[in-house]
Length: 345
Image 1: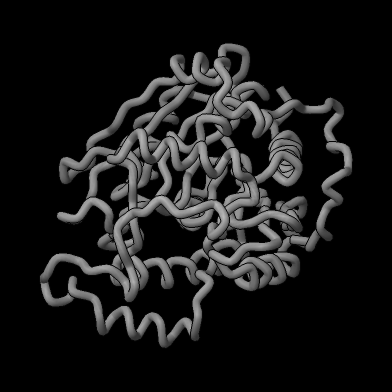
Image 2: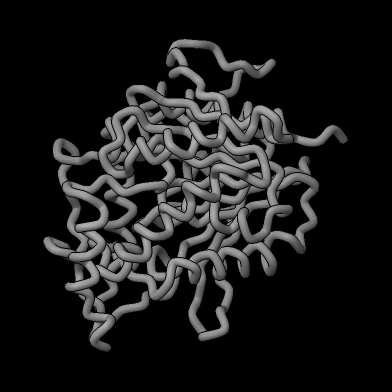
């Protein structure tokens, strides 16, 4: 996968037409609220009777669809604007709330704890979602759009089910977590502190706590005040989607899964676009670079030569919740990439 230099945020989109996306200044406009009333919200039941929440909207004029796999602590409710924008670009859109977060069933007595038994459980849920909700719709073309932890889930899903998606775009993928000290030591410490191995209720990582609405000035996720405040308002209006810090066991599983995802990304079964946030302090960009660097050696002679890594220089971790300029740059890059890999009808 050839490494692409950071794009100029002022550059025009490479597509033949200029796309129009939502503006942060109008994030709560009436048009978006009316659109959301057309979105179907539902859930599916797992074998152990847990509910996995999801939403979707089918576009009447296309057979193309985008599936959104969101990040830790997130809900599809946070992505109303994104779903609106993708729909306006001519795509059906599906989005899932992963187990233990959003509107899906929680796994601990304290609903604020971010927890999972095995990371593979996320992948099994995602596979169930694809099989029961999306594939029966018989879309001609399917694309995967993942963010952070959702990208890890998506990468490992594609390794198991290589023929589902025509292409994937992973935004700030969790191929490694930004840690204060070495990964082996953090993982060792989490294992020592993990209550799950003692058959007790899972416990937070050191310093972990329940959800708190942080101030914009201290956030490390976005430079966009309007989108940050809209997210806080969403979480305030729907307390059931609030999620705090992860448990020690989640951290163990996530560290291992991220490393597996780096290896899986080296030989993707479908064209892959990594959208890197230049100012990310949540995930480790070096892990993304490692996947990209190894991939370039493979793809020079592979069928997936058009896979790319791009950097959005001024973006923090939540690229798709950023200010208009970096967000629009990321969205144009993603949609350009998907269009390049749309089969000719």
